[in-house]
Length: 227
Image 1 (tube, one colour):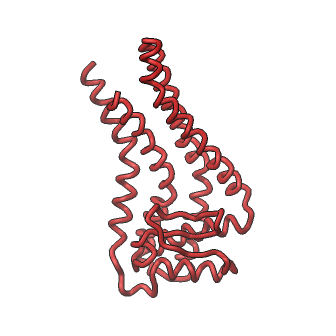
Image 2: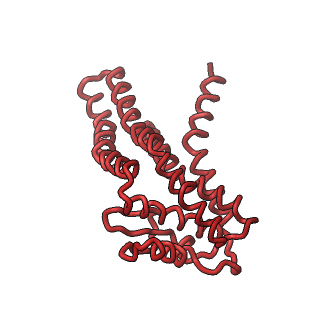
Image 3: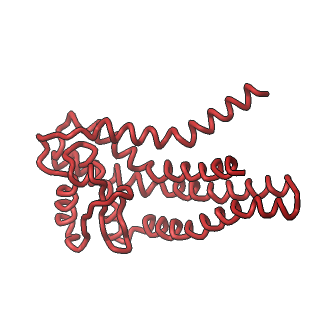
């Protein structure tokens, strides 16, 4: 039993940390500056947006992760991707611009994804509330079973985020491989030699939200530690 428990624990760690580690590894590997590239990720994003007649969509630097904000119609890139000249910078910029294009075209899958993600705010709040109340309810009721049920409910609620991002993965894959990759290949912004690296970055970009959702499950482990 101790061996099985250890294996299960290692599997859990791999499940939670593995995707995030893989994404960081891919972005770092292909994030080396390339002076031979004609521009930075931010410049490339601006070029693609203008070419798509989306001059009103802004491009900004952020420290909160690469993303497209549909509310302000802004493509936001991390400093390394906004100012950097690398395969990672170019590919990530193309991926985020693709979300702006999905939004501008009114694509149904993108709209559905926005609607589902907007529901996660109250789900996260409910999950956090359930966890906060675990020690309080235990002190009042003195029921270990009820505490376990509460923790299980919190895990299930945090798991909703994972499920939503898994269900909406087609939107991410369309941004990466349906829109961004053909641009990178067709415009020859990258050499043929760089395309495999770009594919890896685009794949990592597609799984970013899933990895982040899995990482939220660590909140439950923190509460176990506090308890």
